[in-house]
Amino acid sequence: AAAARPARLAAPGATRDGHPVALLANIGDARGATAAAEAGAEGVGLFRSEFLFLDRTDAPGRAEQVEAYRAVFAAFPERKVVVRTLDAGADKPLPFLTADAEENPALGVRGLRTARRRPEVLDEQLAAIAEAAAAETAQVQVMAPMVATLEEAREVVARCRAVGLESAGIMIETPAAAIRADDLLAAVDFVSIGTNDLTQYTMAADRMIGELADLNDPWQPAVLQLIADVGAASQRTGTPVGVCGEAAADPLLAVVFVGLGVGSLSMTPRALSAVGEVLASVSRADCVRIAAAALAASTAADARAATASALGAIS
Ligand code: PEP
Ligand code: MG
Image (cartoon, rainbow, N blue to C red; front, side, top):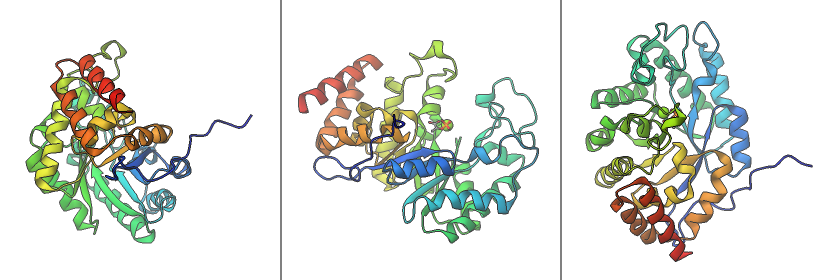
């Protein structure tokens, strides 16, 4: 029998009444990009660039990086591709960047923080992305992981601008960034909420520990509240907000996120058609109402149940 293929997304993402919600893919390399395009993704909302840097003693050179990025961009001509800069840390060690063992790797020198030690590695990556973007037609955007302060957000934008990258953003995956969303969103071109880390840091529960799965749940009221705050900041500042954590692949949460002001959802390609179908069955006003019901709930279980029952009443 033929290998199971993800159902192809039929049309661009939108609610029943035509409010567009870009349905994008999370990918890690060119092969993933091609598969995502075949599955009908409208673009890439999270290109994890770590793969190029793993298992080596020094950073990849400029030419090697340009070639790898071009291969990804070529899979999405004229489409959006959001490249995340290197997200190394003690949990994803790179000998040339993250030498010391840390007691708390999730709280350590990871993501953008590695640029404190080796800023030239980030600048070289940004230059390679800019060169690859100039050679392809994809609409390339760049964002940095693990940002917690306004200064860091400004630094990302400045480093991107210095190499000619026009669209510079940050991931919102620390509670600090969500709490200060108005300031941070005003400083960047776009943001993308990383619900995996935002949940782990909000709930102070290591995402690698299965025993804590009930805490590591994006339906937790504290997490939904922070996402709502970022959505509200997006409406005030006009800065677009997307979600690129695993939560975007949950059709119920997708409806809630759209109701909170999220304009794009990036997920594993196999989830695209299910999320697209549910969104097409509700109006934007339904999403707003359902999000309000989810936010009003006092527990994760109640938030999920309120969303499921509100959705069941519509479809
Ligand atoms: C996240 O934290 O939600 C995210 C998308 O990034 P990663 O899973 O790569 O940490
Ligand atoms: Mg993350």
